[in-house]
Length: 466
Image 1: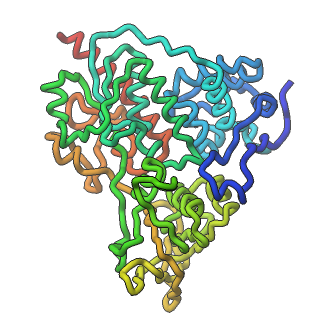
Image 2 (image 1 turned 90 degrees about the vertical axis):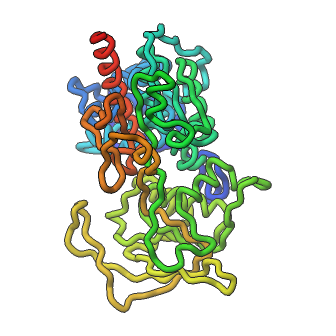
Image 3 (image 1 turned 120 degrees about the horizontal axis):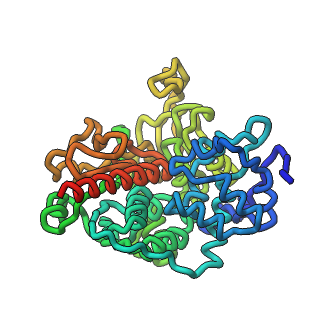
């Protein structure tokens, strides 16, 4: 019998005054009882509107039905048909603006907790199943994937399931892309990422780390010397942006990418870590997205007394997930909204010490649909900040486009593709942040999935022509 409660089951979590001092996962996951109760809220709509909101088209009502039947492994297998990273998506996808936004239960109450149920099924599988996935029979064709982030891993996984010999080339020493260097342990444990990648390896995906395509090898060489028939570029958008204000070159000023990479990938928060990180007293994080929240919450865990989010618009315009904003507030992060930095000031040793800001008002909407921030004259104020973290966005690294002939790119750096991920260079496909600029994990996965299908068609058509 359906559970007609208007509210979804709360996610158990660490208390805020405990979790802001450790790097253990904040959300603890549904118990079996909570999962069964939440799954019973699903109406199993025949037209499945929630599926249309999922970039990888998971059969959501079908996997939830399996949970109501107590078949948790069956639920996982349904998810895995469409997603190469179920445990990741259940943790970091913005379900509230995607699948859950389409849920019929959300019309008169809260939508079904789809993401929480996806995480439950994936975690149950990881805890109880040791059975390796069945490796498909080889089809005799080879494809290369550049970048082991969510887009590249999805493309590689889908191609491997079709029998392709797939090699992923990763610039860093650990695969996972933004999943390992960008998203903190307390939101996405790295053991979870490793487990998902191990599953892809069991399917036959090979991963070559410490390989910078564009330096160690070029795309031309992948075709001509290595014999790959298609290449997918999923290199993300890892080039940080700065504001161009005075003082950005002072010691103590980081890009969010550097700050988070030192913490997440290099484990700089641990005593005796080889990679240093500033343990500051007052930290200012400039920006209002999920990356800004991650950086601020990490800074708090490093022991900062005061951590500020400095954002030029108001709370309604914050681009971060509502859950991340709520968690940040609970953990003691101070929000200085409608404020914008204009200068970072040094101490007597040349290190960052203070930041001058101006107050902002909101004018007419700009091209993004958000009200344009306008400086309020004479409103300057200063906050103490011996560490400043710039989290105002990223753009694609120019290395691929500068070393690949015939690859058309936009002026801002993104690779231009058609709706299937095909670029101007035959056999080269691209997707995720390398095409769109910084976006969500699940949108990058959707692009990888679309491109994998297009690569399969491209190679099969070429084989037929021969």
